[in-house]
Length: 167
Image 1: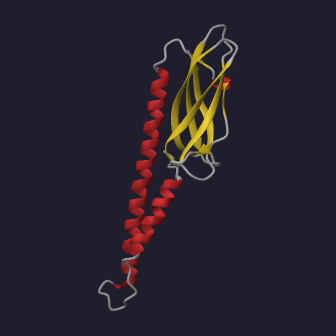
Image 2: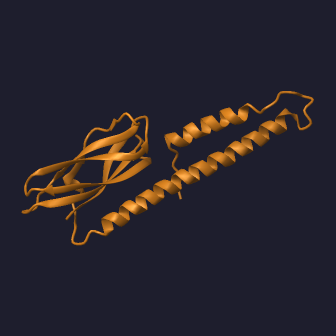
């Protein structure tokens, strides 16, 4: 399993290093010595970061599995990933990323779309995922909806359509 680091993990690491660094001592008369304390702090920081990365990875895996489950529940749906395009990602006042989706209905009757949108960094690392419904798009027309991240995201965030089902 590949672990992917997110901005949130990096911020948590920086905060953890800052907080644990306060307890370090350069006092040579310290019974355990500064080298031992530094090694202990580094070990604690490493363990905490590993735990945070594991939790973040687990949360994203869980969200991705839930998105897959929701889309798999649709009976008689057609895979139309190429018919849905994400717009530019913006950040709202709460720090959540959002992107407007445009779904082109190429069917001969009105259809709805269920779309999984992945929010990624420039390297393609998954930051968050969301499932959006684009309801009742008339035949031969386009419909829109907005995908919004479930948590605050910062930096260069991109939106990609991971999966789209027309039903």
